[in-house]
Image (cartoon, rainbow, N blue to C red; front, side, top):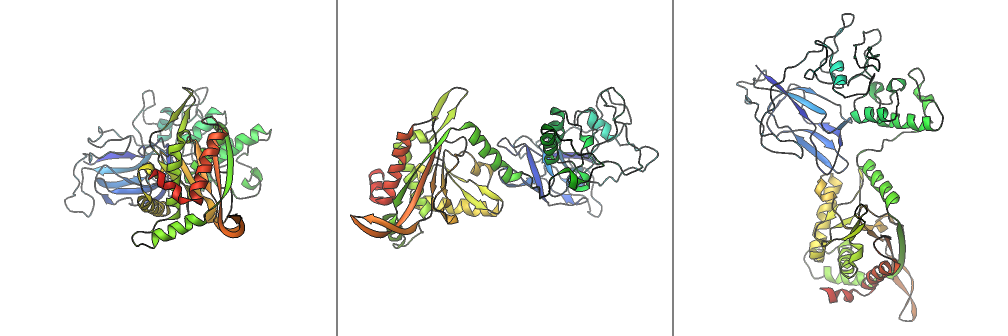
Length: 483
């Protein structure tokens, strides 16, 4: 007899708590092998293919493409130990795992066999279709739950939703009986399940005393999303009433398109907001004559071999400047009230992609020459555009270089990439009138901007760093002293 195993969304590392389903790679009824990728998800860091640790027949999938799931939520179930229909012999006859590990879950042993509880629908209405992706799978009975209760009752009793909201899943059709949840505030049956999938949304509503039954969801089939809860909380804070199920959605919110802040865009929003809240930043800038730097690059590339990129030369200048001014390669530990100066320079650089702004990190940038830096910048940029950067390649930076000149702008005020202490911004390099050797001439001019955490240093240090960078741009031979 086949054993049905439930595979949950694993912890993908770097403190990530949720992921969005981008594309299913398997169908219900399909045979999967151990460690076969079954779904592609997008986290706040990168696109990841998630392998299943079990081999067998896929019996259910949970969540449509575009659905956001928290870590630990069911992804799919696999029947292990019986041949699939139409597959002779059934190659996967065991419940052992692969031994491979994603962060937070191991697969060396199969989980203990669990007794499945079949949901019992009320006699007045037919049972919902088992293949409905938004209905939670049956769970093991919880101590204290009434025998034969519905799956919604079990989910609620297990703490997956606030009192009175029911379990996971969607609301029953009009006229259908509502399953008793048994979790009302007074112990009486609640009104039935609320169309909410994410436990994070339930927790947000519960912590703020919001009754989800009074909301109309803006998601598919009336699904209540985090944006709906946040809007209702803002409306309540402003003295307005939250929308009720009888109110049309168009009357509940102002006209316009609502774009959820999630995935990469949400991660950027969180990080920039935290930077503005926690870092007392200041900015200084200077114009520099980059004519000689451009000539030096042309001379390097005229000798043959791999081409040297401009950003690689700027990165080499940054690492030389950080060696002179190590205060800017640091972070602040407010709990210990200490500035931590870092020994290694892991240089982040801003890269614009179709998925939004990402900041890949060049590890050990201080140990690389211009040719090595050019190759690593090219590799990471290509991976960023393809959406294949790993969480490790997007974290751990100690200083960031932002070349916003590629957008055709001269200057900007960078926002420090928390928890770093500084960011150097580089504008476009364009011909401008410039006094050169006492005469007016047309030179290639660039504006350099440095935003820094005023807790790690004062303006003198920041100005010294920026002036050294400008000197190296104007006279690349200055770098020879550090080579």
